[in-house]
View 1 (cartoon, rainbow, N blue to C red):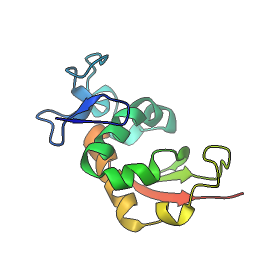
View 2: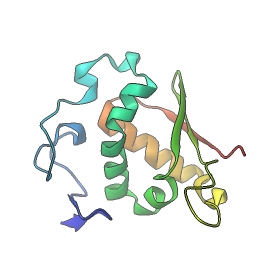
View 3: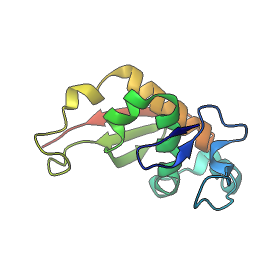
View 4: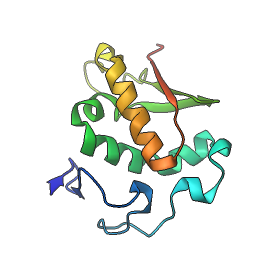
Length: 130
């Protein structure tokens, strides 16, 4: 069993949907987001409630993508397009290195994690507007 940077045990291939996991320390049994509301009704607020689970799933499956994307701010959800904003220069000393987050394979890996957790496929775009 691997451990995340926060020291929480994580599994690479969960046996049940990620959002329904209740065996992790401090986790409460929660139904998957898709069963709580219609997948078509996803809002930025409902995605934010599941964001830590999405990031844990991304870290377990593609640690490099997680390292590049974990500090992005959920800026907008317009239909099936999620915008992550990396313009907060105070988050990391010396800047974020935006060119790393713009890699298409990272956006695809994050979209895969979002779909596994929420049941909805989104297109992920990144921005770093100053």
